[in-house]
Image (cartoon, rainbow, N blue to C red):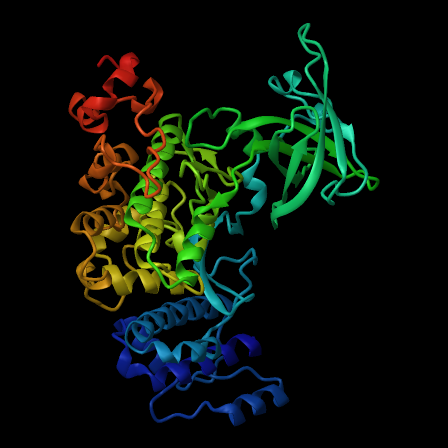
Length: 539
């Protein structure tokens, strides 16, 4: 009790100092008046005295202490008020950013007690790790966890070997000691041997680590039998669950999606089970290409911006067409061949088949590229979250730096509001109906033409504006984006790469990519000179 009341008093007193920046609701103002009257003083001395006497702080007008449920509501209301203040302060006085951490009322985001008892499905929580706000959706008062990212297996699968229908066609796992990623380490496995197929031994020699994170490690390796260079993604596997990334990537076959060569399981001396995804190797990423130009204080050539963005949309049109949402589009997950400039979407560790009516976790996607509906805690989102992410990537390619460089969940929302303005009630409802009553300071949108330099092609600015819409249903689809005038240069048969080479294949569409596309859209997608490549589409 003492701790809760102290926090209420402290944050209330600080809010009083910045009251002139706020447009408080009458309920919040009355609450502050009750606990922190204008004439009162709830400074450190009184709080220390309360600690010493082991007595809860009293209301300014009564002698009774605050009941626990009431304190929860007060903390929620103060958090709401603080968020208003953060938005207002960030929008107008960014230098005060470092002062914000001292204002936050903290609550354990993993507590089973919802801060808002009347709405247990979606609550504001404060993330203690970085003293910042995060919107953490709850189910029955308990936060969603990463376990929800995987599908549970039957109990009989809880053994050394992991099997499913398709895995029967895969190779048996070799036993590998250690990580198997050190330079020169050789991994031997077998493929085939099922349904009368002959077994084949394949050996990979690890060459260097090319990426690592909480998911595991990615290393470059060479197949000793063929000489082919591959990338092997090695992730710790829970024996009780299927790996969703493996299930997803097996479905995919597209020129703009990284291809799976095969996979195998390996174990260590500690009896840890690892899944190894053997993928085609693509040497560069859009992130590194962009960093190269930024270090040289140059803009990325516009032809590359168009090429990369167009190919991202082609990849998304394909995976969205078969029901898969990537959920982590960012420059680091976009592979590029530096010679042909063909782009391939990779890392399907967060990808999921979206089913209408089924909830999904909202704490997904890297922060700079996270759609606003995810920040608002939406759980029934659509493929439009990927489209928002591409809008952020496109803006970054044009600017040379992230458009929305938020430092936390709520700061990300503030960065978006600074550009798009305060979302309307209708827009908030489109993102997450649970937050229609949440009040934000009214901030005007910043004109797009003032965000980009004067020589920026208007078609580029127009495309960004069509992708970065608050309302998910107003964003362009991936196929619609492919037909945008910004990409007209790519449809010109005379267009070449800066080195004189031809463009990578851009119009080799497959029927499943164009499922549901109108005749008008098809005519815009495929230029005349490329229609002979698409005879299967009826041209």
